[in-house]
Length: 100
Image (cartoon, rainbow, N blue to C red; front, side, top):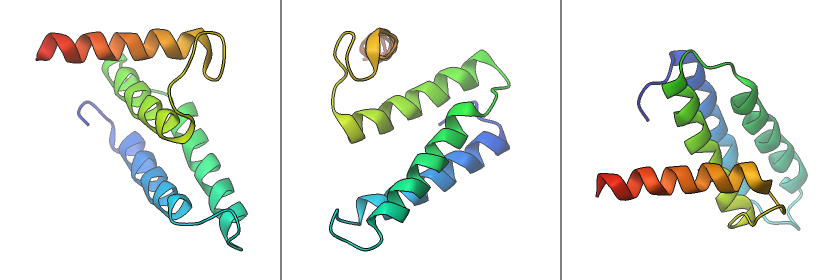
């Protein structure tokens, strides 16, 4: 990921570690609830971290969109992530398609 401050990059690294731990647990595992909570908190920390630039904001949104999609699947209009998530997804897909 380009255009990230060291602070946001560090928070994303911490979230990735928490997410990997969460993904490695199962609902019947004793550690599931604590791993889920740790992932939620780490994702929230990324989400609320102020961005130094528009480019950093876009990179943060790209990362969060990837995580939300892996957790919940594809967003649908006015459900799950809502219309904002759909607009963000479409924007990223259009950008990726224009690069190919």
